[in-house]
Image (tube, rainbow, N blue to C red; front, side, top):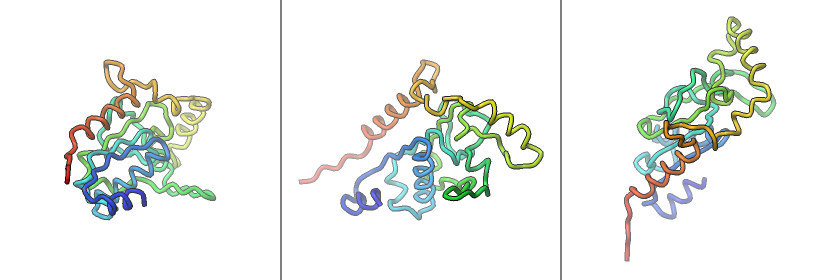
Length: 176
């Protein structure tokens, strides 16, 4: 609604979309809709998307830094439904935005690096071992210290610089 409202009030506005954790799921779902020409703005007006610890991560976005071998929890647990929680599985892709969507996932962050096919009966023992090994692991809350570049740039620093660069290079319209 916010994006649609901004677009209605100022149709020349371009957008930078970013989210962390549940916000990354929402931002990624929005990017999926926009990329399929079903969103509140045209894909041409989205400068870029970055998803940090995306629960629906499946390899469709460009990895920034390390690309752990797992997938988002909603992908790994597809079909599991609990009261108020529905694991929807992977997205259909990012369509027209595919070349502008980034993902950042720290190894061991089970929100975005869950065991693939965790619910497959053959994988359940290994998945349970992974989950037990992650108990008390604070990696999900430590992206401000997670380096995504050899020079030590962290996930949050990279995202801030990426967004600032997109805004700086965006078309500017000045009217009288």
